[in-house]
Length: 237
Image (cartoon, rainbow, N blue to C red):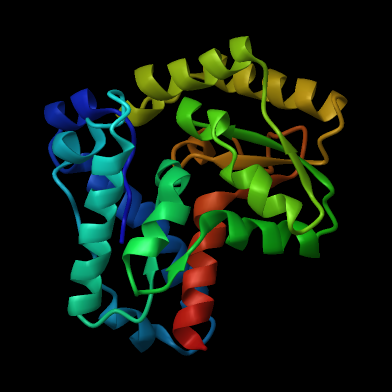
């Protein structure tokens, strides 16, 4: 199952671009890893379910999380009918409704925060900063999952959250890279490092367009990359 971004107006201007972009970003990591395993054929059976973007994501601004959850559940049931062994939602924000979603489906669903928490624990991180969509930063699913691993997670202040979301809306969702915005993101990460973060969660598919280990003041945890690797590991198990 693949979740999508958070800008329905942009999707209407460029039909299909978000779906293809997220799929490519997610699957290219799995493909890159699988080349070293001798298990390329394992990826040939992957199934993808896509919802009409505005009809699906347009319910979120209205707070209709019930409709959002039903849309995800519909997709996962379709994947199960197609023969999938498990599902992933290749987006962070839909995990807001993960707990309710898994009550409505029988197919196992890998949680993006679980995939990230395992990596953070392996690397010995104890306190993580979270950058993502406004909805993801205002939710608590990362905090709850990471707490089970003994890891603290915190988010920027309201002003910084607004900057992060504004850059996503005006630039990253449209494939625009702005160096001034990169600088803003780096400054936010620096502030969170000073507040005790020993790594930063890139908790939105588009954020790695701006931030990576090459320019971040703190080590990065790319949630989409780690979810792709978790899906690959499960496929090859």
